[in-house]
Image (cartoon, rainbow over all chains, first blue to last red; front, side, top):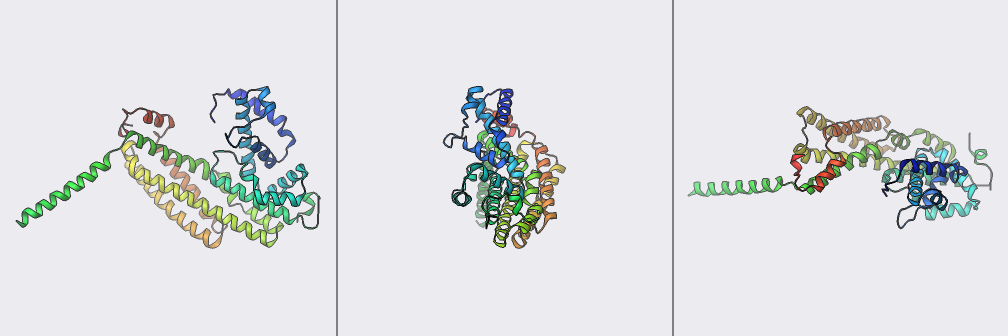
Length: 156
Length: 194
C-alpha cells in the first residue's frame, strides 16, 4: 500500500481524524477495533467517506493506516491492568449485554482481524494473548454485578 | 597395475571434488539479490520486530504477573502463565532462528561481497556462538520454570542479539534496499562485484 501521497496532507488528514472520529474513543483498544473495521478485508485498503471528501481517498487511506498502527502500538504497550480498563470502557461504549459481548469475543475473536497489516506475527500474537487474558479477567469480575464501574470491583 | 588403478581412482576423486566446487561457486545475480534481501529482512525482523525494548519489557513484565495474581481467579492465573510461557518461548525461538539465519548468511555469502576484517568476523563468530548458547539455556529455563524464570538471561539475550545486529549491520552496510534492487534489476552485476 505505497501511495505517492503528500506527507503533509497525510499528517493533516490523520490530525483531522484524531480530532473528529477518534476524539470520542478514549481507549486505544476501541480506536484499534474501529480503525480495523474501516479496512476492506479484500483489498487491505482503508475507507472513510468523511475524510475522503475532505482530502482524497489515497490520503484518507494512508492517514487511517497510520492511525491504526498508532493505536495498535498503544494497545501493545498496555499492561494487562490497563487493557482490562480499556475493555470495560469499550464494552460500555458498545451498549452490548456483557454476556453476549464475552460470548462473541471468545468465539469470534474479532481483535485478531483488527491487527494492522505487516506487523510482526509474534507481537500480534502477544497482543491477542493479552486481550484474551484481559477478557477472562473482565469476565471474572462480572460475577454478581451488571454494569458497575470496573474500578469499584478491582481488588486494591 | 595397482599404481595405475590407484592414480585413476585419485584422479577421479579429484574430478568429482572439482565438479562440486565449481557447481557451488556459481552465484547468480538474482539468487544473490534474494539472499541479500532475506538477510536484510532477518535483520529488520530482529531489530524492529523482536528486540525493541518496549516489546521485550512488556512480554516479561512482572507488573502483569502481580496484577493477575491480585485480581484474577486461579484458573485465569493459570491461563495467563500458560499464554506468557508460549509467547516467551516463541520469542526466544524466533531470536534463535533469526540468529541462525544470519550466521548461515555470513558463513555462506557475506565473505563473497563484503570486505569483512578478520577481527570483525571473529567477533561476529564469537557473538553468534555465545548468543545461540544463551538462547538455548533460556529456552530450557522458560520451558521448565515459566516466563519469569530468568529475567537476567532475557536481558543478556536481548543485549547480545542487539550487539550481533549492530556488528552485522556494520559489516554488511551494502545491504541497502536501493543497492539490492539495483543488483536485482541489473543482470550485468554479478553478486561478487558488489
